[in-house]
Length: 198
Image (cartoon, rainbow, N blue to C red; front, side):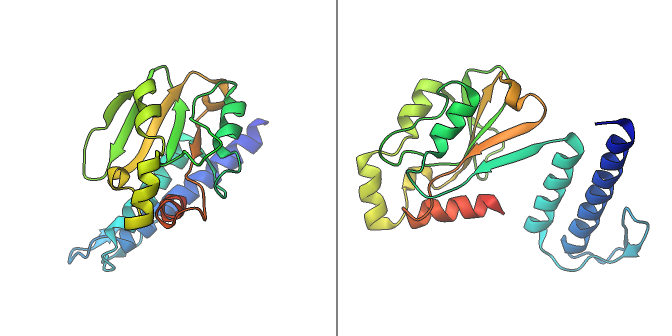
């Protein structure tokens, strides 16, 4: 990419991040005080959609940092985990002839051999060895029974995602590979994948 194309891409990304932050302020907490947006306009924010506003700020931060998310999404047992393992050149994610991806799993650039599990309402992740992660977070027969009875797997209900680090050139420049539970196999895992897609 030549310098003029790079500069144009940077200008566009700066406009996008600025717009995302302004929209997040408009959507954010109701406030009686006026707020000045990045574009210089002064407004009184009033929508009260703080969750959605926070997501927009996260996307703006990712764009500024040059992070590019690649989410592999599809129906169950179509080889999503196998595809990602092939792209990485090593077996990182569990794969099986039965559905086995129970949670969203991000693969990021790094050197840790441990897996970080991020839970909702928790400031710090739980840390697992790769072996324990593969054993605990792979779907088991009793999970399928719980899904049939309750509609979801209780032991995964608070988990937002897992994060695995790999020293891999594919993830070297801000690319995050994301494995997802299969669609149309189970309502709870389909909902998890759709929610993450947002």
